[in-house]
Amino acid sequence: MQGFLDAIDTRVLVCDGAMGTMLYAKGIFLNRCFDELNVTQPDLVAELHREYVRAGADVIETNTFGANRFKLTGFGLADQTKHLNTQGARIARHAARDTAFVAGAIGPLGVRIEPWGRTSVGEAEDAFREQAAALAAGGVDLFMLETFRDLNELIAAVRAVRSVSSLPIVAQMTTDADGHSLDGTPPETFAPALEQAGADVIGVNCSVGPAAMLETVEAIARVSAARLVAQPNAGRPRDVEGRNLYLCSPEYMATYARRFVTAGARLVGGCCGTTPDHIRQIATAVKATAPAPARSAVATVADSNQVAVTPVERRLKSDLARSLAGEQFAIVMEVSAPRGLDLGAVVAQARRFRDLGAVCVNVPDYPRSGARASALALAVLLEQSGVETLLHYPCRNRSLIGMQTELVGAHTVGIRNVMLTTGYPAPQAAIADATSGDVDAVGLTNMASRLNHGLDIGGQPFGAPSRFHIGVAVNPFAPDLEFEWRHLMHKVDAGAEFIVTPPIFDVEAFGGVLGRLTDTGLPVVAGLAAIDGLRHAEFMASEVTGVKIPDATFDRLRRAKNEAAEASAITLETAQWLRSRVAGLQVTAFHGTADAAERLLASLST
Image 1 (cartoon, rainbow, N blue to C red):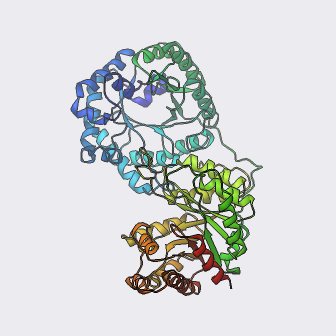
Image 2 (image 1 turned 90 degrees about the vertical axis):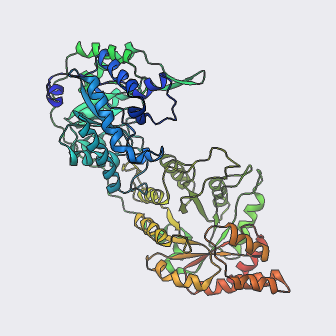
Image 3 (image 1 turned 120 degrees about the vertical axis):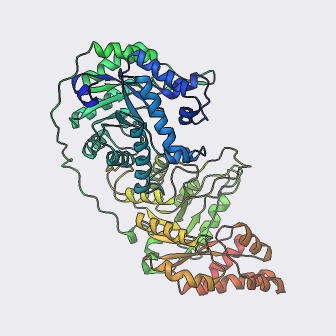
């Protein structure tokens, strides 16, 4: 049988359709691990491969799209990674016989890799390498890397596959209707990058239907002379009586297959919703369409009007930034949104804090129940009222692209100081389907830092740089302190500009770690709780993450004749100790009273 690259240089090849769609149609629930079917129901998988071969597919993909160690861990199957991939390749090999090429399907890891997530590029490459080696052992003819949204991850996959095999590599991004990847990278950027990385065939698959994908393929053809691939969904999924259905007809898909070929595609197939009927029509159309002539290499030229962006000097970003640059000791007070629509009282409280000497107010994003304004909405209202804010912005329940949109929006309405955290999911009792975020604080800090350099997450310039003053959190009393320090240094490397701690009560213990904090070179804003009594202190110690209160503090409160006065004295003593050692204080009255916070601020300002 002719080799894959020789074949694709001779004629346009047709790939198969959607294995997942067909398995679902056969009664396999979506929450099943489809890759495990290579072992538990191999005959079913083999029959679907044969259906696509009979329909005219020249290339069939192994049922291994999600068979990497990261995804399989979620099903308790990580130890079967090699077996599931090898078996998937063997099933497809047997079904294809000598009539079709077998492509080892490799999808994204299902976790964010650096700079957006905790998974390093090296760890990602190890996972891709493990999967590719197993597929090669099973007898594949080529590798199909598909449905990647992150160009960095796809390039890591290409490198990993190439390190274990010389077989051809097809590399596909998944794009939105505008042709950009789901993380915002345009085809003019990702196509040359994939070609340079060593992919033999480059293109796009999934996410959109044929019409939008055709425009993307045409854009790629203008900047790359590589062999091209196009595998659209059978349209956008539509809810029909509770089921997601793809409604593009086989005839419609075939019409666009001809257009893909005319645009330069040498491999045409389908993704979600594409059945053997679709492939049958596509194969007929492709055979009747003359391949496009070979294209000359196209050199991409950087926009000559693009001017290098210089980030805004930190001290010019906000009053808080100037204070932390050494102009004055920074005192940050805290206000949060109450239940209901009336925010008048909290605005008045923030103004009192400002008038008493606070440089700004922190607006936390606590995962609390009830109808409340968001932290972002309150921060905007306060900025409009003349009060500078420090917006606490967690990753919780947010996607990377969504966070970029929100932060850009926040910047346009005046938000400058941000404290970026991973956050905790909302209580399950309050929100039954609460989920964690798309990335953690490291990825979010990287994103905000890129905005400060005039670049979006796709690496594209967008004009003047943002002026975010980026703060990050650290828990100096974390159970796994070495992990906490490593995580902090990742955030520092990502572009953090100041560090905020939880409320400090044990000054002796904090003194033991303060040197490590200041060694980062960033100003430290120490947390401080304006406690109003024993009960409040007990709550802080037991229910607030990162708080450590020494027994001596509880003893003083229990023995005190005037509990409130003793609580104020303890808080003020702590503040005075911290004041000579850190750049600022962030004062919270969480579950306490605003009066205690005001008294403390008045004492500190005199």
